Amino acid sequence: MVITKVKEDILRSPRLSDYRGKFDGVVVIGGANIDLRGKPVGEMLERHTSNPGKICVGSGGVGRNIAHSLALLNVPVCLLSAVGDDGEGVKILEETEKAGVIMEQMIISGEYPTGIYLAILDERGEMEVGISDMRILEEITVEYLKSKAYLIKESKIVVMDTNIPVQSIEYVVDLCNKVKVPILVEPASVEKAKKLMKILDGSGRGYIDYLTPNKDELESILGTETETETGAGAETETEISEYRDMDLERAAEELNRRGVKKVIVTLGKRGIYVYNDGSGVGDAGERGLEDELNRFFLAPYKGKVVDVTGAGDALVAGLVYGIYKGYPLEVAAKFGLGAAALTISTKETVRRDLREGLLKSRIEEEK
Image (cartoon, rainbow, N blue to C red; front, side, top):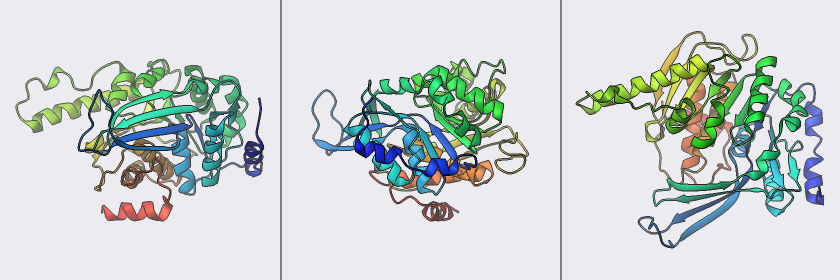
């Protein structure tokens, strides 16, 4: 494996060794890649032909985006991921380290190139289709994660996306359960969410403290649809909506039965649905403790939509920020909505001026 001088400088950072034995932050495990985003300049996206538009290139990846936002929010955070021994990898290492993320534990692969994610957006900034080449993440093996077990054990919460191999996902969940470190899992896509089915089989072999699927990912994990024939007799939009809400609640209850303590379902323009089983997570009475079951919807925050890319990652980062700071789940969820609203109002996947003060001000605006 060849490591360039630039990468040596980045990976030689002494900060993690300063934390060793007393790391009081967040470990994020997941994807780090280059994002390519194309958006038409016309009134609508024309399919099956070339569209004049704008193409943006930047650092991305679900795990990397979450870690980047957390660092901007002044949360100590270490990223466990992989990049190639190439210019794209250098860009990711430099940009993410500059934001304040601890990067010295990253894999620099001599076999695979840095991952690439290509997104085509429509005229409204909504994603039309995405294609990802993430073969490099196969290098996030159980063996690699075992070498970082000390760091996972010392963290206050672990955040993991499902881009990594299923065996690695299972190892991290098992380790977090054993050492009683809360874990949040972000399903990266409908297909990758299926990796959680084996863990969440109702056998009690593992549990997840927080799960943040969208509606399609929720259905993928359960192998069902949340909008069922229960709404067949409904006549009004309100009745239909009530039936769908009942299905959503039943789906969350089923996930809880299978081992998920708290489910935060992202619903696009409708906002989020939160299922909290009332169980406490975290350090004995210090952080993230809840004392009763709650189920509720929160509407999205108002604002202009420029580009939705990265909105889900920002929501998770805001949520984790709230959990890390010890807020109740409902307040933490509002931090998530605030971070998402701030992100989609810019062209950036991670809003560069995101700070604690800006996020708290955004929350206050909605009161």
